[in-house]
Every structure is written in structure tokens, then in C-alpha cells.
Length: 298
View 1 (tube, one colour):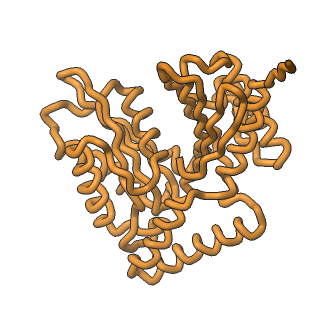
View 2 (cartoon, rainbow, N blue to C red):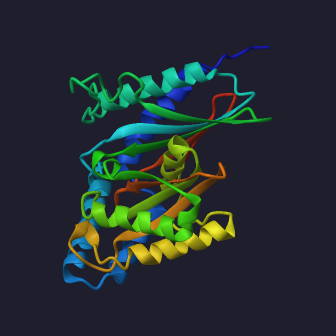
């Protein structure tokens, strides 16, 4: 009997290197469909021209195997780790970091990582606490899911947090989200996805908002009350007239997604995180035995 040992850390590293570049080159089908629907819905001449330019941009990236946007962002990973997955999270993080470095050097990609005070470059899209990794641990499972969401600066700069009070109610949530998107204008390269996080604590609300932007476009929160608010905010935000690239039009956002958590009785934190039109994401499923399944739509 022959025993073959799998270099599981190497498998995760290879997956990360592939995911980062794949996400930057090949946008998901649900995003392509949403952009196509936006072109049909837009009535502003300028807005139509912007959306047609985006369409050509995507086609050229497909044809040439190139990046959809020059801002390669920072790599943000979300890992769902089964309690029986045989690689410790410390080793998973090391693999993600090395994979990010390899992708940056081998493609090559622009390196955006700098020291937050000196602004000196810290490495090939890596540095102290970079890349960013969010963790979820799953009981009674031996697999690993890795999602890579490169986050560009234009959209990430348009992130907002407000510690609302319960008396503000749903109207207060709507007002804050509306004010945030109107204030952002064309800076985050609309039309994109607006992620809203409600509840928990200040830091967790922003995490939820960033989780919201990674959902496939048009999916709805499982809670019908929250799903109704998603619909209401989508309609409200598209009534602003900001339009594609902030130049006016009918389509300001492609979708609004909300993630929520229960909170303290005197709290109601609300966070907004914007994702630009190039809402890039890519996922991989890694088995305990080292098999990898890349998932375009997850």
C-alpha cells in the first residue's frame, strides 16, 4: 500500500494565487447580467455612453486576458474553515499571504500595499496584517471555502459608519444610507453594489456591510423584513439621479444588499460599504484531501 501525502498548505497557496488574478480578470456572470440590464434601463445619453464604455472594457479584458480595472486593490479573503480541516488557520493565513505575493509578482500586478504612516511600499500586495482575512468556523465539516474580494481604493474610501439610536428607526437607516451615497457621488465608480450592515457593534456592522457586497447580485436577505428594506433602498438610491460615474442618469446602483445582526437594546449601528461597478470576487472550495473546486458564482 502506497501513502501519498498532500502538501495542503501548498494547495491553499496555489488557490490563493489563482483566485486573486482570476477575480481581477474575470467578473462574475451575475455582475455581467446586471450591467447589461442597466444598459437597457438607462435613459440618459451620458449614462448610456458610460455603460457602453464599461461593456467594451469588460469585452477587451476578456479578449486580451487582462485586468478589468488597473486598481488591483488589496486582497480581502473570507475563509470558512471546517473544524476537521487538517490545516491550522495559522498555516492557512501563511498560504494566503504567499499566494497573494506570488500572484502579484508572477502576473505581474500593481503593488498597492504601503505603511500607513510612512506610505512606503511594504511588499507585493502584502505587509503587516495584509492581506486581510475574515474567518468563520464551521462545526462537523472537514473542508475549506476561500473567497477573494479585491477591494479598490475608490470604492473603499466611500465607507461610512453611524451609530444610530433605536429611536431613529428605519427612517434613520434610510436617511443615513441615502446621505452616504449622495455624498459619495461619482467617486466610487457607480453603478455598483451598496452593502449595508446593521446591528452588532461598530466594527461588526462594517464587517457585515462588506459581507453584503460579496453576495451575488439580486440575492435577498433571508429575513423578509430585511429583504423588504433592501428593495426599498434600491429604489430610493436609484431615484437620486447620480447615474453612471456620477454624470447623471437612472442607474446609480446595481443592487443594495443588507446583512444584519442582533444588537444591544440601546444600539443601532449602521455601516455602508460601496463596491464599484467592477465588483470582483472569486471562490475556491478545498477538500481535506487537497482537491480544489473553483467556483465562479459563490
